[in-house]
Image: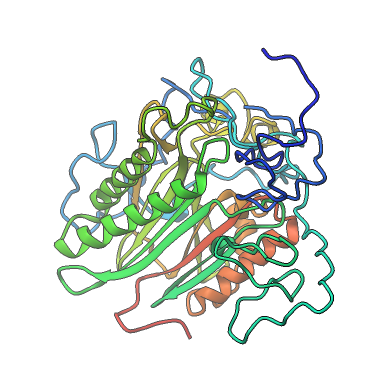
Length: 454
């Protein structure tokens, strides 16, 4: 291990995101960090992936009527199709409404994966600065020319022209990235994604779309991915996974593939897309051997006029919220996490497990260094109208129990999905915005083609 030596003026890595620097850089090319004021290097701590650990306990079966679809082929590692049940039959999948302690920001990339446990930690206590405020712009030089009309102007000093690399030529401030805040409304469903208040970039991604099945009935698709920040290029991983899964579903559903099988195939396609990001030329990672392969979590939902299918790997979640709030809401997914495994093994109750600092250690993810891909899928046949909320932990950290989420979700979410998604985002930001926040709102049943939000 190298001894601690005084650092030269020219830093080799950005103290904020550890991006390699070049001699003479005043700002980080990746996150825009002002290198003139260098804080002590933040601490780092590992996240969990459990190699060889038993799969998370499946959702409980029910006596619901069978779905009007041909029986799906084998769609899980157990060799049997996932059970069909009503969302309101699910029990014991929330954390009892116990408030989680404030989540600290994610550490810089480079947190190792333990080969002994196969667990990835992507959060640490106090490793990342609490805020990323705008640096004070350098006063505009007297007599500086006003940028021509139509020129992109800096959001910080409102005077300098923004160059092709996204930096102000006057004050040097990095401009907001395109993915810092995105939102889309596609037919009757919508999604929003936001950087949050504590991170320098958005590592979440989503894909939403709608299509028709062979019988001309509608199908709605929502995919949400959360990049694992302890891995390298997590933003690329989430984007690649969401696009691959969405494209796979849009190709399979119109051809008559059973939705549950289509979801299984989509998760595998997303895994291949993330794995491909790790294919680098020999020696490309010579100077960054500590970095893990790109990785992310994934959760998705398919909604038809009669069927609801969810699929996931990791700790991003899907919730069911009926329009009639006098009836029970439910969580439709079970986290691939340390806390979920402790509860499943009977070693802790949910309140104890989720209060533990290891609670969010993930035991499943998409990426080349995942020990075994274990996609989860489940189908439901709700007996009443409602909405499906598909989200990353940047939202559910602030509304973890299904009942909490239902209290925040507007009553008109099915008819105004974009408004509902914005309200949920606002709830997370008001709660502290410690993480990137992404949420999709999908109405059930899927309305006829051409019907959108009001």
